Length: 254
Image (cartoon, rainbow, N blue to C red; front, side):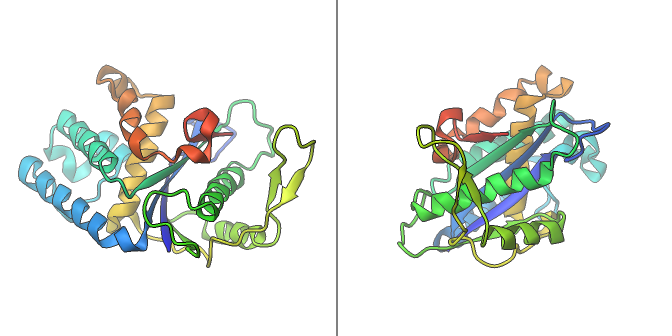
């Protein structure tokens, strides 16, 4: 069984939205690698406690840490950014992780464009296809399935989309095979989404940091530009699932 933990950066609004992009990132790992990966994250958190005074129970929420740190204001801002960079580097060293990345550029989209629906459909399709072809890092069992573990979102809408895709999942034909699409009903992703509170999941927090770094590559804040933080997403290159979108470096762009 492959598990995909998902978080977002940006918002889904089209009118008067403060963000141009909406980003989804899924952190994928096999159940047989869950415990050792969790142990690696635990060791990383222990290092943060010793070096920066970042407590094990505190949430590593990238945008909040830099803009509305609350209790974390006790840690200087440049050190909070260093924590995020170290977290990025730690993820990149985990060979059993894979990242599926989706970006919606909202500029120029029609008023009825469903940002949430298109982004999630693209993410789930890539999860499904990569499972079916056994292209994820980790074990290659022929009958592996997948489950979703997102941060809290529009629960009903996401589960309705999953159920629909098990019956109707239109995938455009490849170039050279004519216009239209094929209905590739989903078979490898099972069950409804299992929603998690990011405050209590290190894996969701990992997805949050990856999504934030991708967003900052696209539209960096002035602070991130000063610190060259717009380049941090590139550090995750070793674990990006390139087969999800080979022509765009593994990042699905809508």
